[in-house]
Amino acid sequence: MTDLAMSRRAVTRALATLSVASVPTMAVTAPLLASMPVAADAREWNAAMTHYRKTVADGETFERERLEPHFEAARTRFGDDRPKRGAPDWPEYRDWCVSSGFDAAMDQWQIVGEAVGDAQTTLLAMPAPDLAALRWKLEHTFEADGDIALWCEEIALSIRSDFLRLLAGEA
Image (tube, rainbow, N blue to C red; front, side):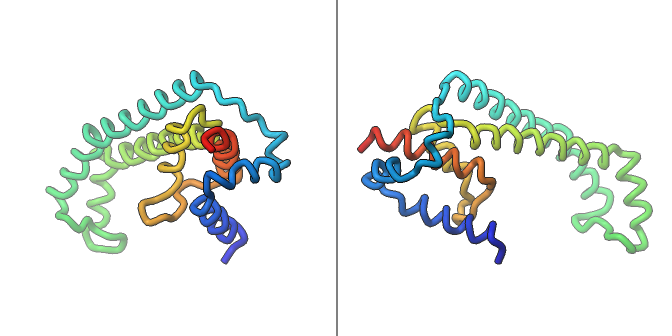
């Protein structure tokens, strides 16, 4: 197991067991966060959230209007199990992917997915202006099974800073 995986698990456990009562104590004992900017601008958050929602909506539209028709055409022509590399009909399938625009649509889908991921990561890394924003960040950090979906040190420190700043006032 890598050090990164170990630190992910440690932070996951720490976030899960963090109680509101411990937040003021942590604030006193967390000098590394004292040098981090904690100001949270609701206007900046709202603008980033608007951008994120637009990229998600654009992705859903692209999938519905451009990708699904290609997948349906591939199913119609090649069946549910499209040809695999080395199969006798592989060259026909590859030619179809290029000529039909399927490859181009998949390349564009990659770009759309990266835009959604970038917008989400921007929100996760910026300071949450309120508890609703912190909740959104937590909901978008963890998968349904509890695994961490997006991860980097900047996001972990941002969420920790949010906890210290926002939950201390709730105690």
